[in-house]
Length: 140
Image (tube, rainbow, N blue to C red; front, side, top):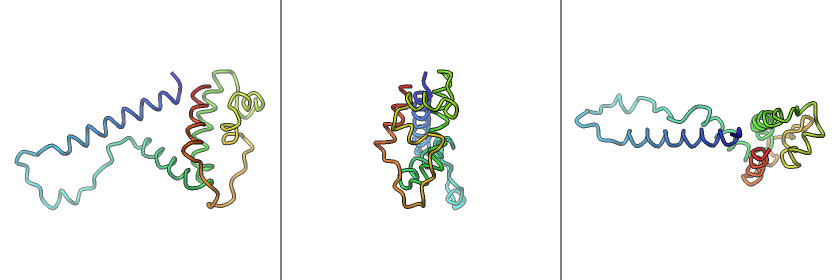
């Protein structure tokens, strides 16, 4: 099973678990008295911390090219390296082969010599482009 497919399954399971927890929280308490202390208790996000972190990374990466480079790119590099290792290749060692296998859209984001964008005002990664990158990585 591919890394991206496994991640999709984990996200779907986490979303289902979060929905179940939210539904349980809405059930009547049958006589339990609520007091001011209930209002003061912090509510925890029922989703796994990794999922919440990745959601934020994707959101920030859509807003800023610098965020896409410093936060999302390392995740994509890790996925690309995991996909390439199955073919006996390394991103930093087998540059030409990796570039050809990954294709221009993915390569532009994960190439070892990619320069850091100048400033936070650079455009982030679009949803469409991120979808293309993930599809290409999954296909590898």
